Picture 1 (cartoon, rainbow, N blue to C red):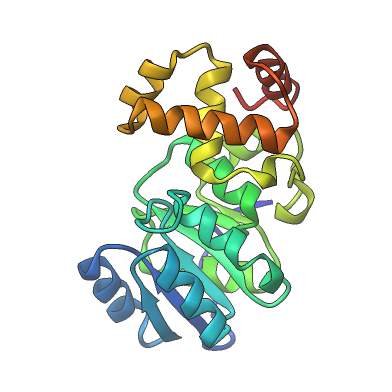
Picture 2 (cartoon, rainbow, N blue to C red):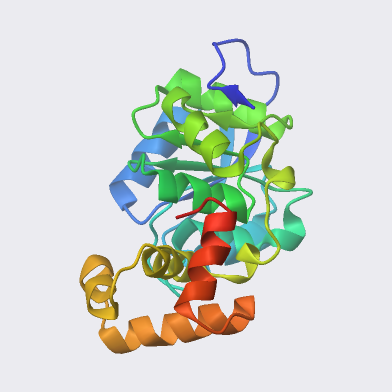
Length: 227
């Protein structure tokens, strides 16, 4: 695992897809990178992102964490939807969020790195080249979240949890709040969803993890240090 590398000459034009739900940001990023990478396509939601990755087979996908569409899993859902391509396609999350939960969820899904949108253009170019070359890249403050979550400096392939991988990003959010002792009503308020939707997510989580109660779910989450 490395932090954002210091500037050096990028040896080749990397093939990139930009995924972000804000058209202005996509346009600005494309303009900033135009002289150094080949932007093959842009996408604005989960479905269009998965389609673009499969159609264009980029080296690197610059992926926002919070995206509309799909089942509410955002960037992590995009990575999961392209998991069969991870030997060829590398995902680098780039987001305004520096929340530990966002970092951990997208890395767990299979992303190779995570940087914030405060990164400079030169640093981003170096990060693109680094992840395409097989390195794991994080903005300095974010690397600690990964170490805290996984207890290891292993790269993305080594930190996946097969059971956790069954859950969507939204189900992980609900699971974590349930394990922290939140009521269904509190979870609904926290995530801006209905109580019925919370109940549905909890039911799916318990079924996917083959658990039967909140108590078992809490113990499961504690064992993985993801509360």
